[in-house]
Image 1 (cartoon, rainbow, N blue to C red):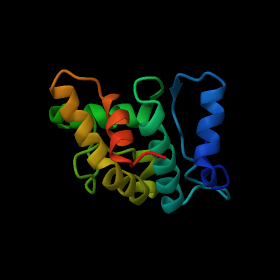
Image 2: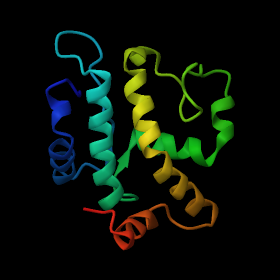
Image 3: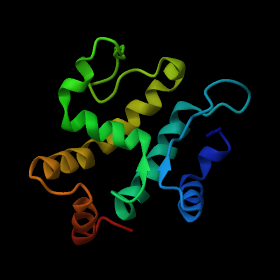
Image 4: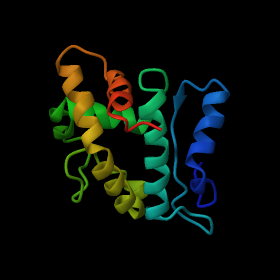
Length: 145
């Protein structure tokens, strides 16, 4: 559970889980109560984890939100499933998380930030290449840490 305190340490939390051998990770934000994560802190947490994942772990560690977002980029028809409500604010990246509507702005900030990276991963996939090639592209461009 990602609360407002934990959300200040995205890299440390991610590295800890990775160090424990976690191959599948699902980050769940605490969206109610005294220690609820704020939308801006949630966005910063997701972006911090995403940056590290993009540089080192694409294809090695599965993060549910990132996997679902890439799937949406690769298959635009997946958002047309009428059994899953669409968020009226979502620009087509993901269906609404009704229990986390308070965090919509955080999710939207993450989607805006990550869109160029997911676009490259989508294009690699369409070329029958691995999305993990993004890691090499980031290293070659000097954008990795």
